[in-house]
Length: 340
Image 1 (cartoon, rainbow, N blue to C red):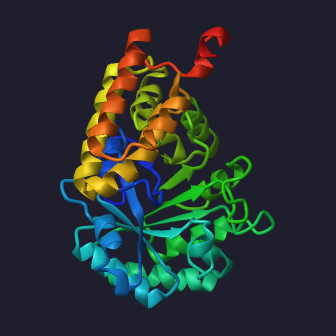
Image 2 (spheres, rainbow, N blue to C red):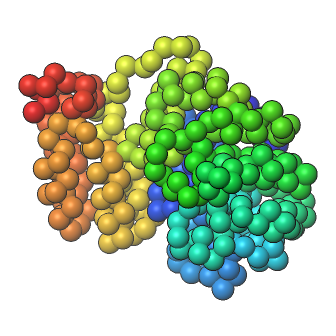
Image 3 (cartoon, one colour):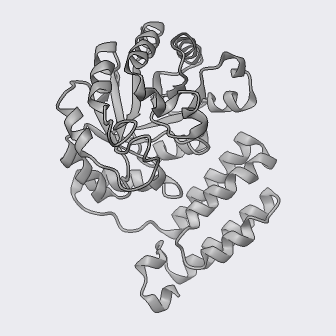
């Protein structure tokens, strides 16, 4: 796929997720089949450029191209400065966040709250595109700021006219947060209005759903977010399904242990052991969610204080799973008497 001047391995994108899509997770998803992984949201406040959190979020050392960095803010001048700063620091694509529904973002009129002010949207997009003429700029937004105001078509037109190279649309409004089901009619309509690539996002939880959304909307690609938490191999499975029409068998438990082990090691190295153990807990919970015996395991694992005990617990849990079945099986896939 051609996207913002880059030739991608496929049309599968990792959605930017605060506290999730750090460098270790982005690298893992790319390794397991994602064409692009967008960074966590980086502030446009220059006073925070030197903070530990911002520096970590802007760390792309060793990351596979293309490096896409998402910036957020509501002031055109500050957003332009943030774009220049990140481009100078190695960003190959600047992505603008107008999709986040979080109150702490929307309360300062950033994220999806910006969709209420279309003239401001235009000023921000034009300022950012002008600030980084040699770096492609993309935009992520929602179908609207409420169900009564689904103005994604207008935002898409503004984006294309401003020089935005591609757009990603989440199939919910800002008011919806993450409640209810994503709708794809608005995305399909937007696709008929613009010539730039359109990426569909929202409730894409399986290879079959990815194909359905691509077919229904005519979108150029799909963006997967929460479904990749604890299951980064969903990109490999989806890539295979879109190419062949066949589902891959469940992965081997031994392989998932290897994936988890490498991910944890990367987290410990990236954050340092103390913070790494804390960050790793949520990923371990996601990796094990729905597996037989995982509830008791997670309760115990969340009390473990250090790298050694955490990694030993993971080894033991997956070792026991492998004795029951060579392939990963979730409780919902087992007969009721075995899942109990």
